[in-house]
Length: 381
Ligand code: PMP
Image (cartoon, rainbow, N blue to C red; front, side, top):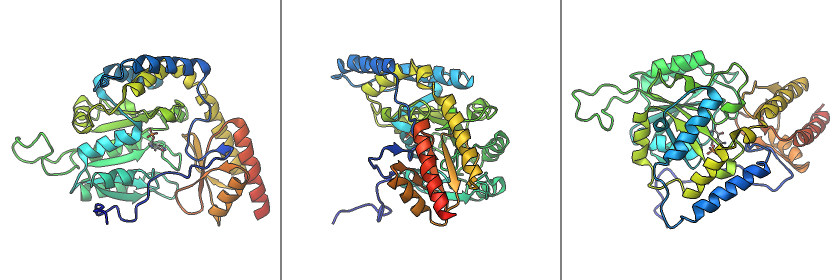
């Protein structure tokens, strides 16, 4: 018998089914492969890095942090010093670093459900308690419930995905500001690391993490939380190259925060966590951000069409600021999922009962999805 740690009993490895089907619309990838020149430049950069593989990589990867800061400025107009950027193998790992630095035994991480199903896993893996508050019926944030719970539980972290997965809904800026104000002084009361020598034990702020994995797909007029970083030192904004950037295979996630906060993440990361091949490939890809992101506008337009089309079929469909659409409600969503799969279209069973999530694919893929779903709806009528 193995001495498996308490809390892991009955747990399964996380992940959507990896099925080999023609149309994969289940994990919110960008359906467009990188263009030839991007592939060639990434390959050349990786080859150059391979020549130095006898050496460990740059531990603090300053060149990559600078390139990511440059990208964020181009994307949202917010200029940040490279020391305010952190990166790891996917925003999954970035988030784990946050929980490792600010969570831990006796501490809580708060989120609003339905939301990304990895959050409870980061909490479990760092022995942090995961506390949730339900979203309203329209999946918007229940501000009163969130702030009441913050006052009562004094969480070390509040994690909010915007746009949220699986619903696709973005957090309105006034709600984010309200949450950031409520988070001041509502973190844990015991002295945090580094504050032990100070007199008294002032209440810490609650670290507010806005997970902007899908931010590039937001509709015009929806601001990024990056704009609030200078006002709120307890704000963290996470991003990824996996979605709009079309580089899910690269495994490169990153965040922006204060230098002080980033310095705590440097304490908990494993040394050399970002391989020199990853750093080289990411830098080369960032040089091509415009080409890689070329399809974002067309994916947004496809998404808006898909939302209207689904609504036109009488379905309940969330407004989406992401590259996926959340729709329902079906008496038997598993049956609908299976019907689509039988037609070679893989979507995701996730979130509240009766709903499905579909990623925006190429126009051809979306057409196959529509055809298959139309058949289901016709058979139900
Ligand atoms: N946050 C959200 C809301 C997501 O949906 C995902 C991926 N499905 C991630 C983070 C993780 O992305 P990655 O680790 O590929 O950067």
